[in-house]
Length: 485
Image (cartoon, rainbow, N blue to C red; front, side, top):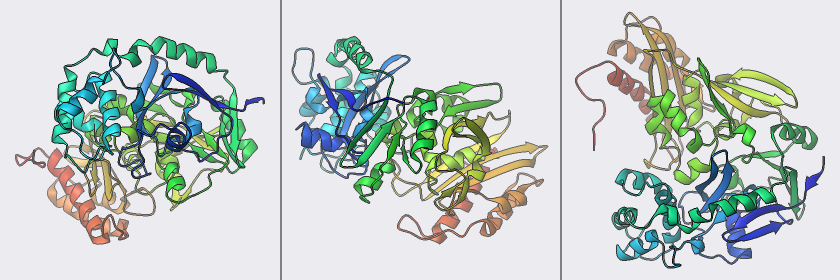
């Protein structure tokens, strides 16, 4: 198959074409070192602090969608056919400071200034969506931006002030949207892209069928979706990921569908793209979904990637296992279905061949009356990795437990169900005594490890107590299980 030998994208107000691109080249390094756009900073180099935040716009069925991303772990090859916007491009219609920038000045939202460009980009993205008028929305948008100087009060005040300034329709980035879409369409030849630098190769398949062919041709390739995990292999572990096959651009892996009995998510659907449909069909996950990384990570990270990398502390596998999810795996033109809980074999080992990929996830819709919950315990509430993740799905019959699915992350080498605890609940009345018996049985299910996130004893105690919390929240008692702030 013929392939294009360059990536093409728009950077602020001009077109960029690059043929010398390695698999591990980051967008941040390109912006700072090659384009001399130094407003985008490197802070943590792991997608945690947000100092490198930029906007990346990609064509969708609804037009052009801009999202905040972490340029430090966003790989350069992945911005093919995108519009990359840096802080240098922000302005009001007259060419002065944008409303967000001006409000930050007036409310003293910056001291040392290192984190300020990233914060401005996050608030600008929120401003374009009309969301700066709510403290809650502002705080959510800033989950992925860390500031060590001002604290967040003046930054939040600046965001609220910016909400009443300017008109989104007159914003330069909105006004030029049609011309940007036209330029991106002109660049798009629908071809596979193959670029390399110094022997490091990046491949962007033309579609999902081409992805299947590429994996058969290349063999042991590194698949890159959102790069929220792979990016750290590069920046922290100096790992060579070549040849890398990029899949985040494949629209046929971003399909979302609902039938009478299930929700289907393509493996390339991001956390942000799935948030609304997950909240609609599984409302117990609304708050949980907002605690997966920060806004930038949720925009980049994908459901399929979180599953396929096999991490024992991934946020979505326990949740989806509790709901009885299944995977569609594809190798060439052949497909097979597997229960998600059976996909994870051992630490770092999944039931997937090197030339096979996760194509979609099927999540059964819950029967009326099903009791569901999902919990995440981490050192920092926002944008942190789980110490323990727990998800429960339970049905009752006449007050007794008919079915129980109790899934945990961070408790074993893989995401895993608590089989002994489930057995202790089966057929028993849904009472505190039954729950405490199941809590005791968890000792048979898990022997967690101690690490810098949590000790083994802490994990065991928390896991058991989360089941007790689930009971208190669903048993209809008068004592609240949660304390409001």
